[in-house]
Length: 147
Image 1: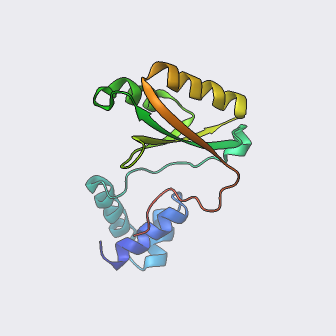
Image 2: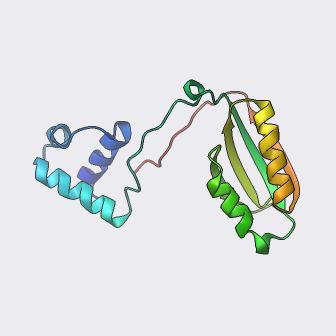
Image 3: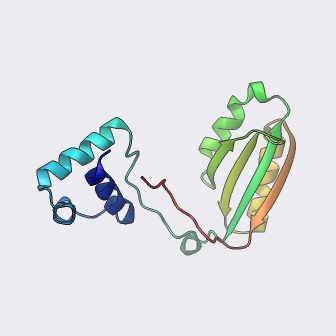
């Protein structure tokens, strides 16, 4: 990545709907050159996706929780991973070092729905132990790294 690619990425991160023409004017490069650079960054995997980020509260999703969990048999985790990938209220799952195997970010409508989801995880996936914390507010939330 050179300085122009970084400028392009910064513009796209601010608003991925910015037109090629607008980007080309900001970085002082022709529109076809900007388009080619974006295509190369996408093809290389640097730009993973163009997406829309929704406001959870406007979708009735006002509760964010983080569940740390350890599986009884971590070597047999495919069923658990399939569940994680199929559950729409689980936004992220990270494999960890330390006291727990995974950290799962859950965004859901209320504590009753969180309880149902936690019960479902515990009953179906050979979970040895869990610790769940609820976020009171979100101070910072980014959806991508900075170049």
